[in-house]
Image (cartoon, rainbow over all chains, first blue to last red; front, side, top):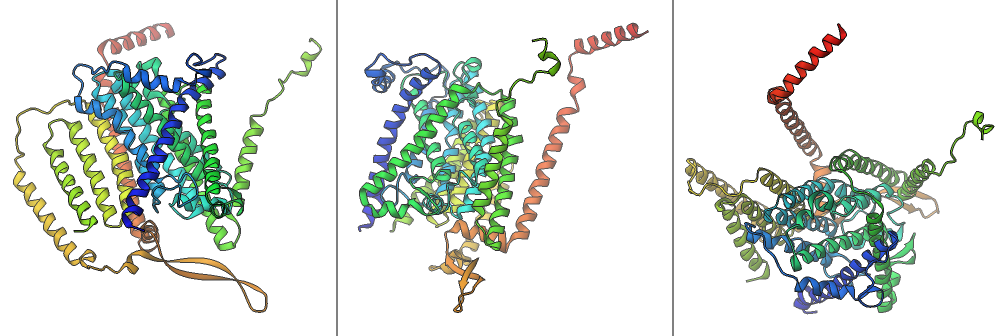
Length: 382
Length: 222
């Protein structure tokens, strides 16, 4: 094939297709979130525009486009304009690296350090928030930006450390290889249960979602970093946040839930099986992938409906005193088990899965609903 | 002119220009942003040199971590603009001298080192030996385990890993120990300065109230 086609045109086409679909999902997620929050809070949610309020997806962008665009006096002009745009670039770039289905059709760019590159790109998403908060010339905005910077730097560490166990098991930084490894053995969720938990909490904190939404805590900081933003610029911030959420859910699916495969121990819908099935197989893979990703998106929203916001010192305590030591311990245990498994010839994943199941069982046992203890001497009184 | 050279030319120019702007800008936040641009350009240059691992780490550590902290500190201090009179440092001659010396050093190293080769020994750069335990079925049917050494070409993340954790394990650990000691030292020094002048900065009325409270307590106990 012509190298220009192979290296430039095809990846670009794939990226554009993925981009359009993902942006559609992001726009729809806003409606889903509001309806779901309404359901949880025993109210209706948006239900005026179109059937079940579905046309809200179109009404919102139109509203954002038509609203007045206000620039506060004494704002740092360039930084103020860069603020909403900067976080969009890395999140869109990440879509090039994420395999949405079996390769080679559904991967725009297959890189052998994909995991690292995705981490690196998502970590630069914080600049928009910091810059926007700083450039607005507003104390609340600045506070929001500073909180966001502190929070993201803190949670970047457990975010990265929780992936190390997965990398040790699969022995690769390539997302496709990690998925194939899981199809041949077992979903990383089971042997890396603690890591998956830490990853999910850290990614909630990275995207500034409840219960970690301190940068935009409305009861303390008005709107946080986006207080002074209106119209399309505000919409860009929202777009970046939801895109980042989606990217993180894709990563979670790829690293811990076997991506587009539905197989265990090499049996079931592995990458090879899907590739043999041709185009329908590929579509099936993408469908499986989307279902898994959407599950996590719903958990995100569920989180928002369930948990109250942390205080800032609680947030830092959780990150530095619980998440990081836990992630480090997980790395040590995983490393030791993998090494022993290689030299003593047993399946390290099985041992780790059993350990994970034991931890879950113990936790559930401690959390079991208990009958209220009534002292024997009081029974006669009742 | 090939694509790699074109990328190097364009990105390298941006990198040099933005690094000059880092020191030329009057607003510290703008300086920090140009430093960020420089880091990103250098990451692209690493990719051109087939060092994708170093590129990813460069973005992850410098752009994602260190620059965020830079911006954090700059905003906490909140210096909007530096004074307008542009002065050159008194030591600018020394600075230029050091810059030239480092340029000469690097130029000679690059011209004589690995990168000088038109066709560098790819086998040396990109292959590692990995040990695996393999089950081997003997002709008589019994199974024995054998240590198999595989030589294979790998991506450079694995090559870096092998170099750090096998070939240069001890220097690597020593360096990390140094960093740990330095970090603890920094924390200790920072803590002591914060806790020392605490009493002096307490407002007078608090000190007075404490004295009154003391008197009241003594009177009560007596």
